[in-house]
Length: 175
Image 1 (cartoon, rainbow, N blue to C red):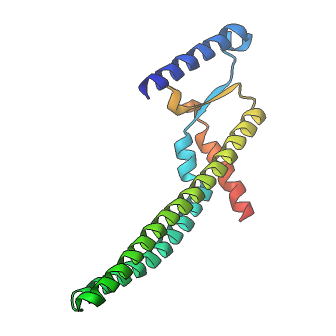
Image 2 (image 1 turned 90 degrees about the horizontal axis):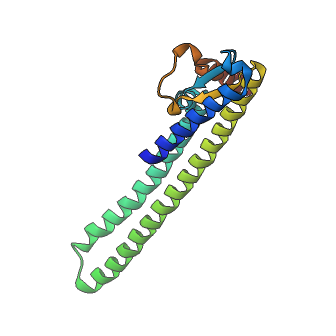
Image 3 (image 1 turned 180 degrees about the vertical axis):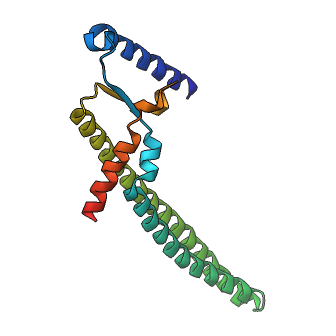
């Protein structure tokens, strides 16, 4: 992981230097650069917040269903303690079946929620990316970096808040 990050930084540095040598504007200091904080944009984007609320509600609903299943298992377990041996075997089999159903339910819910989350994150990131690209073209930026790849930057080069404002205004108009 560290090696990959170091290689990416080296590549990024070489890329920026090559821009400076190949494009007269950069060599003379005329290139227009900016950076964004993708993590901040993602977490403060209202669409992300709204999705998190929907997912949390769905998760609570699923948890309530799960609790009902767990309670049914507990009831069977309590019954096991007070019944005879033959009935006990039948109840034990019933409890084992309920436990298997609970485990399957947990797997299905986990897969379903993870899939919904992944799909939404991809959709939101594509929207953020296209907004950054559109903003960069409109404002005539030569390069917009993600701050995770920067070792140092002047805060005045950040366009994070501008991008976030555009995204939230668009989202507000749609909803």
